[in-house]
Length: 169
Image (tube, rainbow, N blue to C red; front, side, top):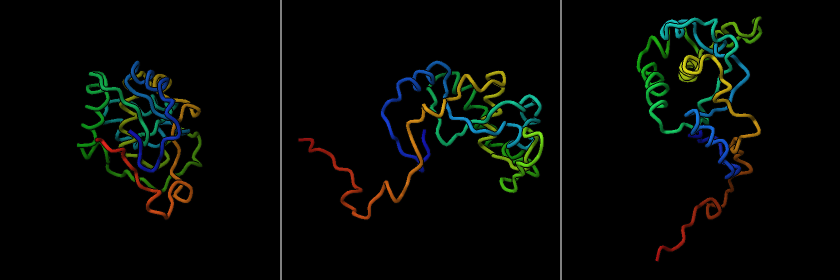
């Protein structure tokens, strides 16, 4: 799955898909640890401790490769979706997505900013992979997509923005 704000830049995805086949998931990390962008009460919902996520790097759900396996269904998606359907999990009282304070030291302290679905996914992944994101984190050089640049990627000429299909006759 890739967010609509991104476009593919390469068709060389075999290596990254092979990694997803092995562990069920590959995603690209951000610099913040899960503990910094997850409301403390979400950890309570998952019956775990925030401290376990101090050095667990978050991955972005904007672009994620999920391999269709029972493990992905029952150990990732089930718990992620279940959390999304329970208000006290996905949006604990006091959670907000703005007002982040990244000037707090140490950096793994809760920033005051909750990332809702992203936080839930990362707590699930942390628990599943024993707090090690290295199993499913892709490297920056493995990216085969980039953000859409509307000036560069789209033209005002409607004919150049359309897809044509060969005749099927």
